[in-house]
Image (cartoon, rainbow, N blue to C red; front, top):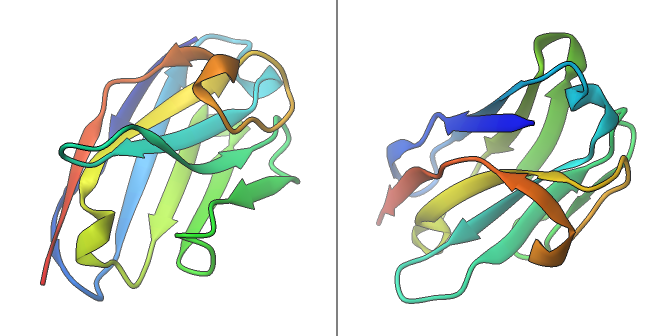
Length: 123
């Protein structure tokens, strides 16, 4: 599965962005997908994950209630809706396909990475 993330940009604190992760490959709907992010000078961290069907999701505590992951398998796309953005959300955001259909939370469970998209939140 090949992934391509898009939708990043510059937004003021309190604003919203929606990231998209478009996938190629007929088996996309069989895999869980996750979003990770890496802020300048920091390690990459988990943000959110969704299982193959979209029924089961999980969000990191730092984004719970503000970000929502979803997917449309008919369009081979996963989304990350980001609301109430904070300056500390500034990072390069990466989408990743898992090794199975179940949700995942760590780099070790990633089968393929998309390229990152930069999100910058100004105060």
